[in-house]
Image 1: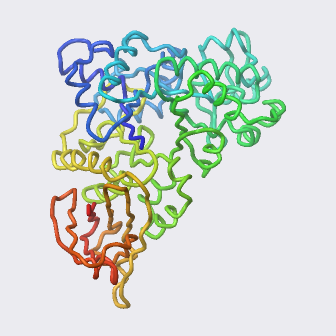
Image 2: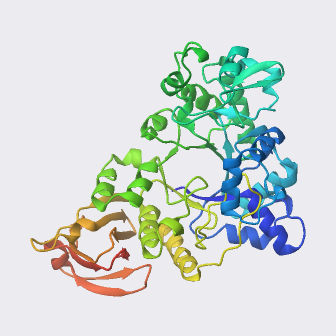
Image 3: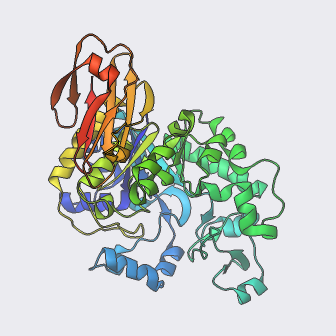
Length: 481
């Protein structure tokens, strides 16, 4: 199952350059650094933000007081030299020269492949930079406006090359000031998107599509109305993805997705879609809510991406301190589907660095947390094999704490595992009915792979009553039979 490690490429290379006392690009990352990236339990690396950033977008960002405040909040000693512009304000899908250019990326991909890792890169289908070549060469790929629009709503439109274009947006927020809106209904844009993705597929093993749901016919039509023209009979992604896969059959498609549109995007061709709903339930709701979420059909769950943080979310250590993060991490690591880990998450970093910055603050490493993740990732890789099945904890009339537990099993021909997570801030006990019908008549050694503790239980008790568990607040077990 896919396990992705997201790396903020610009910040990461900057840290390596300072550590080694020389400029480090993707072409010359030391081998021992790639060895550390290829940690057990990770099979895919997402080098976030490798494409050419927009000088015009950077100028806009430097004038935006709200953005500048966010930069200062994350990096109190920020200077203008620390601000690189947004990696999602793409001027051209060519690897930025400061990162090593296309040759540097090819070298990085080879280093990853030599260690058995795939490479994922970004694609931003909804918008481009205001100095992207298409604004002058192919204006029919963008949503157009008029001089009257620009006069009436200058925050919503921008003039470039004698033309007026709509600024990029999603339907629930004001337009982004540094990007221009692409037209998902344009045949020319669809053809160009195929070529762009084919080019990315020449350089990587997968692509993470930013805000993928914004290009769906119904979403795009509701956002742009008559400005976009008539909706094509075929939706955007069913047009694009098969044509890309005709050239790159094994290219992994990952969608950043919200608004409960994950299933629809899976049906439109994506291998995996963000499971933002699980993230929100783990952060804001209770175990019962999570249990309902995990009752979805298994094919859908295998197409989800479970995560606790990424570059758009607060750091897990800041919002799920201590054992709460550990419990949630055990859950997302051992569920079906893909898993996404974020650079710095393993070390307990607490500051979310805005993607515009090329430098983040220095933070101390949480050594116990790093040790925990060092055990969890290879453990999860060993566990997630075979058939997954949720387990419903059972309690007693005078003890309802079982409702706070999450549990599931993985069954393979050469392994059986049970995961139990206490998704609450108080102790909990339960009996867990097991799905295995051949336990009777002998003792079973049950080992917690995270702690190393082992206990023996008789199969008759396990069959008749289930496994008794008692967990501290935010406690968890990953049991191996």
